[in-house]
Image (cartoon, rainbow, N blue to C red):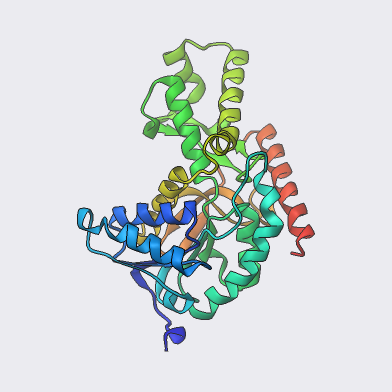
Length: 324
């Protein structure tokens, strides 16, 4: 029986939730060539069938792949189960405003996931991702390394993009992280930011002739604010964000499937890093075929650490309100 499967097929992925985010992730994964099999699951079976058909019609332009709409039993041997199901963030709403509705949805999903798949990696993408990843861990009882959230991988990409634009350099050479909550209390870790090994402050002198600490601080604050508010601005303009997160999830899947040991700022449980425990938030971590291998605590100055503790406090208060 499928529910007794104790192995995973490294070439199979499941996406639960076929809204804007889930269907765009499925499309990105189809194009990636990472998987040979993908099952789409949604409470609206016709929606899942329609997305599977539509995405599948593009396979002849990509690589051979089996895509179909299925049920929870079909995820038994999936290497990665991606959970995107949940209420959408509306204009004016914060990610934390979604918490009660989406935890309710998660409570119905996770028992079905763990009933059939106890050996794959569970990746939470639904918002608020840190709280929902914590909830998924507690509800599922699965090992912590195998229940992760998409975290601030997208926020970090937005930060790198903004720094690249500001300095007029390729953003791929920018090394900087957003840590903490994927949300309003997120922190740009400026103290460890650099461009190809050159500290950001020094690089600013080279490219923008910024020598004043005040001028640099103002520029960094403006960039961090744009990164934090970018999702709100996109939602205001087009009601949802989905392309960026689809690329972020594809990147995480690459690290897992290829066992890359890549350092990515995903959501995972803290065990003493910066004095934080029993809270899931985003921190750079080594990611491979077993999920989270090790959290990498980046260098933070005193102010950044205080903001990180505040971010964790916000998340813990929500956890407590939701009964965790």
